Length: 277
Image (tube, rainbow, N blue to C red; front, side):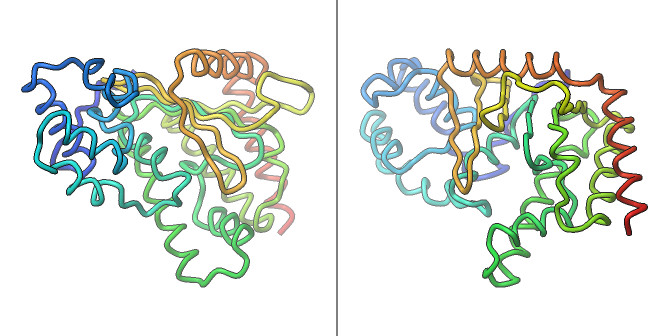
């Protein structure tokens, strides 16, 4: 388990807002629950705003200014804190990733974004936006590759991915792209930067058949789940649902190949792709 992450108020506008919110709330002598009540949100949601794992939307900023008497501070600074390089449906999840202690992800169709190579990511974005200007695709690829630096620190994020075998077999780009992508994943696992499993076709039905799943835990905030669809995504914090998603992930992990057997399969498929080109 990596050591706890401290959110540096100077690291981003969002972190600054979170730190300032905590300071102003405590100065007002209010608990997180007391601040959340007139906003019709939970105390845990206020905690997520303070920890920087959730975005402060304009309406929340306005209400906070009114309740805490902060003379428009949060309203004025909210816009800068919500700017993002990422698509709207994923921006908040990407920000949560950056401060997560652990991420567990089940991927049924595509290599998870944190593990994608440049060529693989480019092929994914180009297929989704076939008429986009090259500059648009370049920016999307650059933002995705930048996220991958979360895996650089050996004492940082713990990332555990379960790939459906379809991820290995579906050719994204071309065989050369797939060979490089699978070797990249294998290299990360061999260097102990990630935990990797493969759910084989032979397992048939399983607990996450209905879609992808990303689970995140944090130092000072409740866990979150992120569910993604075609050009859409939803970040969820309902405790009962998040608990159910954790159970689903654990069941998928129990059905998957062991990490060592998974690596053997990944490297075997990578070799097959290498011989195709």
